[in-house]
Amino acid sequence: MNKILIFLLLTTYGTFGQNIVWNESETIGLVPAKKWTSTSEGDNLNFRLTAPFSSDPFKGNLGISTAPTLNWTLDELWTEYVTKGFPVSVNGYKKIDEGESSVDGQKSRWIEFYSENQGIKFQGYSEIFIKDNVMYIVTLTSIPKYYDDIESDFKEMINSIRIKTVANTK
Image 1 (cartoon, rainbow, N blue to C red):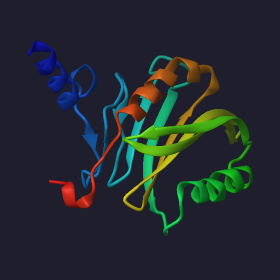
Image 2 (image 1 turned 30 degrees about the vertical axis):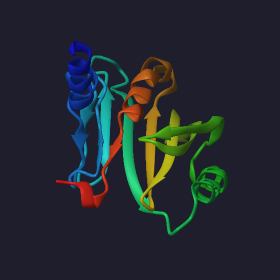
Image 3 (image 1 turned 90 degrees about the horizontal axis):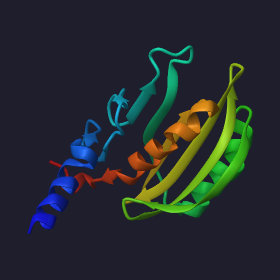
Image 4 (image 1 turned 90 degrees about the vertical axis):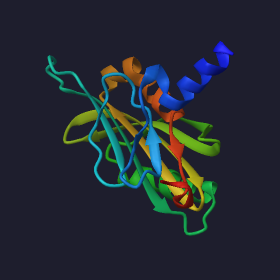
């Protein structure tokens, strides 16, 4: 009985007692890792980890956005947006690794990569999945020297993502 109660508490309140943070329409939610703060506006979810006493105040950023699939499959979207798109649209793009996983019970594809913006090198991770004909794009960005330290936070937050269909909200 005690094990069931603990399980229910963990699934209701998320990891370590934290609540799920939902977007404005309550269709996308996740449990932010410790010390990550929401910078979300509207239906996009965004979280940031800062290093207030460092010369590099930015440690990491996680964002979730959506787009219609236009009835494309995950593999078709992946080919168009990542395989073809990243090399021409992401400055300083260099692929590190890619693979398959799942998010909220849905098959996903992910890629880890380097990019550069205004002379600053970044390490990124993007994961794409589809649910109810909506493409969800999870984007994680960090400065390479912090990436290994916060990679477990990234994975923890991705594993906590929950999607509600519009008919099931509120």
